[in-house]
Image (cartoon, rainbow, N blue to C red; front, side, top):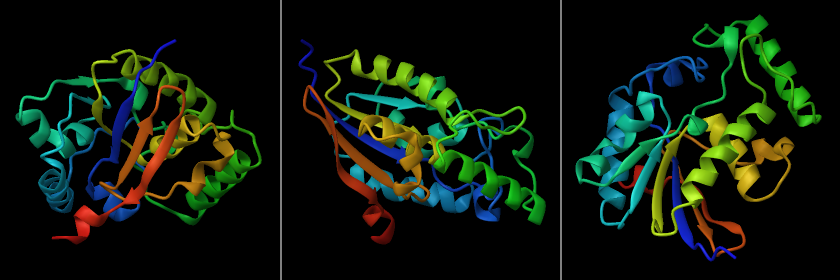
Length: 208
């Protein structure tokens, strides 16, 4: 029996210009943080720099590393896992929001909420496909019992799906986990189950 106990600090990356414009980035857009995103990263670092993180896990997309680079600069070891990448939105990534694309997104979301979790855009990924790679990423993260306190930086839609997985809820519940840029979900693991102890915590962003 694996008696691993862990505390996971899971954050979404800071703001990018596409976030600001309301344009979907997804896995295929490797964008940089903008000035606001860098400011959010500074505020998060200031609030949590004294937490004794044993390890950092980020996605393969640079906006996650930019969001927590100051922790890496402290010498904390880090690892990139593609399982933490954002869901791929395929042909709609980086495209301006039009009435047609908004309707397509609404239709896809409706499909997901109705339980059609294999639905996806052309060239994109379904929630079920993201779940598969997220479970692989979590297997890696949980296979290190010596890493008691872990910082994870990932992406909005992916974060919602991961919260469903960790709390053993169906992926159809993904929209019950709100988030904004550089918000924190703090999750503990007691050896048998995960528990969200802080959800959508943005206090560090308000203490500017």
